[in-house]
Image 1 (cartoon, one colour):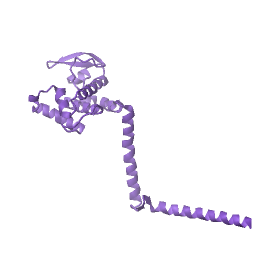
Image 2 (cartoon, helix red, strand yellow; image 1 turned 180 degrees about the vertical axis):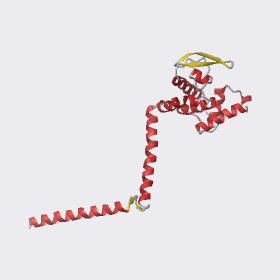
Image 3 (cartoon, rainbow, N blue to C red; image 1 turned 90 degrees about the vertical axis):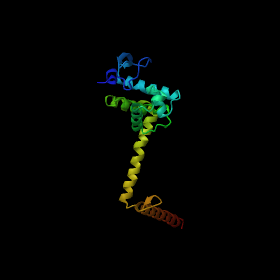
Image 4 (cartoon, rainbow, N blue to C red; image 1 turned 120 degrees about the horizontal axis):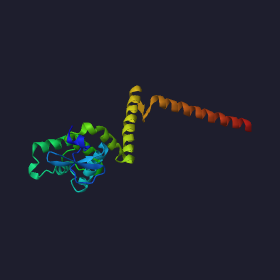
Length: 201
């Protein structure tokens, strides 16, 4: 079990900041790590730390990672640093030069956790955090993400069933039904008109 798992600290955040849920300090490898009472508090602290860094101007993926690792300019070509950045890039789908915004913090936190080697132990917590960081916006976007592909697939399925035969967005069966309906309506109007003439006469 690594430091992150022992301390409920997926980002291996160092002690010194009064995050919610901090219960102590764990010393290892010559460093002092924050200890959290629950995995959720550890994940929340990581997300908060990322948002804070972005707000301070570390708003590209590369600049943020270098800041997070405390890497000096001279050490940025270090293979370990380069591999760390590549892991976060792969996880987030971003490039080193991608611009960051605070609402991306949960996604970046997952990437950091993967680079730290703690992700598997915190996977379920990250999934929950991603859905609750902004309930209104995430639930709406999630609904749209499900609804739009569903509608598109239904349309594709219907097109395949109809053999792709459509006119003005309608299949020929619907067009035929519209003409039949219109014809019946004309017959009804004609019948009512004739009935009125007969009664008048």
